[in-house]
Image (cartoon, rainbow over all chains, first blue to last red):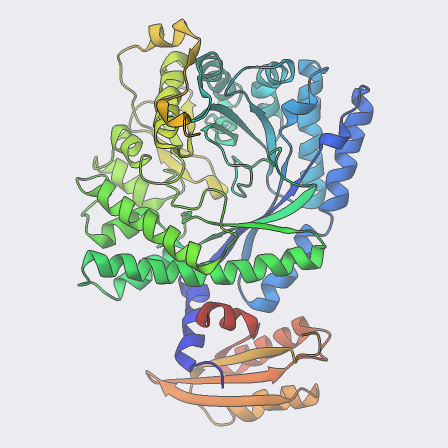
Length: 453
Length: 93
């Protein structure tokens, strides 16, 4: 036999008891050829194109998952940033287009479709402004549509006029979805240095450098890493990194095999593997618990950044060894509401908003799925976005903000978002104002790091 | 490449009892599936068996999975069938 029984058991155990899964197969679909001066025609073309390319996505992914015995949790779609198509549209039409995307996702049995997006890191074009104006209503009146906005890059600096508007958009979205605790905001990500091939929601869109259609895959496995570490309670940190690296290697190999098979059967090119440790609320499927296993009493205490940096880097090294097509965000996600360990850290007072900010310096993405008090002013939210964008810009990495100012909620309340989005303890924001900084507007110039040529 | 045999791995894990192998191989024989390799051991008190089977001409892996799942339930063991490539990918460079 080619394999040892132990090896086979390891694979089976990873799936059955450690939550190894392919988190998402995300089909990117380019919509630029759907542009039309007649809005109704454009809408129809978009609907037809999405439902044509993705019609077999769900059944094929499910079949492959069964054959290989590794579950594929989510099947999703990412499209061209919609703002690129909205130059001649009105706000009402933009909302209508969001509903069209929502309907396409519903028909295909897809839970999220990403790409109701605008890239405004240098300036806001006509279509971008239309999308901004439509965002609160679009997010409130659709279920499956995810939006994202790029407000800064290392090359371009930070567009603070866009940052100011987004603070207001987030507040209004929360208000419009207040009967669901501001859930609309969970579908809006504000990025610095976004990647064009990210398969993970809510921030997935198909960048302009991408092809006609592509299949990107996101694997995950905090549970597998956690269990691997538990078997070596006394290893030193170099060995800990090695264990994480080896585990990430195996997860990535499994993910790429399955991603390529799904792509082959759908007849579309395979894009990239995004190896991100993305937690879920399932028992032991937590990034925070990995950090605690490394040696913290609670996530958020001193040493958290060091442990996270070690883990994030080891994950990347394992992934890069396993596949030549690693892309997307590839690192660790630290969404609060989707990670039981993070939730506990906040509830017990170990983890704070400032520590979360610091953590975003050493792992992928940023302030993610954090519920804040409903009375936080728009300018404070804008300033949080500006801080994260600055971290991303200076460190040449992706950062993002997905915060939910929960209407009526006070610090310490617990809000339920339901399903994959989980639940979150409400955090208070700094009571001192950032109003003047935001009111100044303008552009934070590209940093010295941009001058690499 | 295309002529290569397609293989799957059947794993059976559970409490040891009389006739497990007979029952599993019976299902395979009824479907005319050839067994290429077989290995069994007792691990921490559990009966553990791995079989490599030839599925080159098998149209419907799913119905085999279903039948073996049901068999597993009826005799109190866990039976999985997975394409071999997944083990290849994870454990061999």
